[in-house]
Each structure stands twice: as structure tokens, then as C-alpha cells.
Image (cartoon, rainbow, N blue to C red; front, side, top):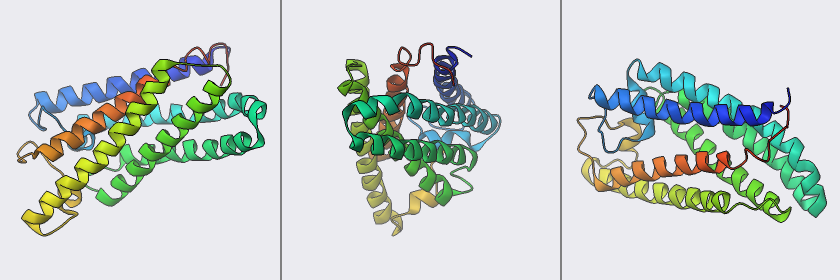
Length: 231
């Protein structure tokens, strides 16, 4: 169907944002997580948040898996315009983006509370692969004349908050180590509304939310590029 790629992008972005906001509202109104500011993964520990979170983001991420294949097809001739190196990179980005989407689906369906290692590992792969994919896509489009200041700064801020999230997470874990003699205490003991939240934990959460919204902002800039394209 003509324009189906653009519609899928819009659907995936809107569904993802609505799912996150809805999960936040339900979990905070019911007093199950701290209003300011929860780690995204600590929100879906109860129903109906868990079902909304896994279903909504699962569908949104499946949409991103399909879109990765669309972008691969559309970016291929643009990569050929530059060099064989970009053609090879585009092939790699198809794999990286697909792995990121699949890991994201696993992440939202394997709760941090029940499957901490699986959840944490797949979340790391998802965030990292999406950052790499969006950076390459921005660079390739920019070199072909598809310039966007919003896309540029969305990529920059996503990387910035990714690094800040990692830094604050390490600092929080170091603080937990001093208190519990276990660097990975937070992984096995996710915070809840009763948890005394350190400044590092709050900054980790704030960085995570900011990074995710940067992802969605960046994705929204591809609407014109996908106009009149089919899946």
C-alpha cells in the first residue's frame, strides 16, 4: 500500500509514546512507583501496567523491525552514491537494527523484577543498537542532502543521555556497594515506591527517559523521507 511505511512509522512512534505515558500514569496514580522519577523498567511490575507495557511497546518495536527492512531498501541506493564502505555499513545496520528491535521485544516481555539478567542485557543491546543505527542513518541522509537540524540534535542528545545514564547508574551501583557490599545489588533488587531514592538513581531515570524521547523525536523526522513508500 502506498504511504504504508510512513503510516507504520507514525503508528509505532505514537503507540510507543502513548504506552509509556499510560504506564507511567497508571503506576504512579495507583501509588506503585515513585512519581519522580521511576526507571522505565520499574513501572510494569503490576497489572494492568505490565500487560499495557509489554503489548504496546512489543507492537511498537515489531513495527521498528519492519521499518528497519524498509530503511535498508531505501538507503541502499543512497549508500551506493557515496562508496562501497557505506554499502557495507548499510548491510550491517540492517542486522544491528533488527537485533535491536528483537531484543527490545524480549526486554519488554521479560520483567526486570523476574528476569533481571535477561532484561538488563537485552535492554543494553536495544539502546546501543538503536543509537548506532540512528547515527548511521542520519550521517548517510545528511551526505545525500537530506538535512535535518532536529534529527542531528536528536542523535546528539540521545548519545549524551545514554552516556549520562551509564555514568549515573555506575555511581548508584557504587553507592549500593558501600551499603550492601554488592555492586550488582540494584540489578537483583529493583526499586519500588518504598525505596529511598538516591540522587544518582533519579538522574539515571531522568537520563533514560530523555534518551528514549530523543529516539522518538529523531524517528519522527523520517516521516517525509518515507512519504509515498510502501513496506
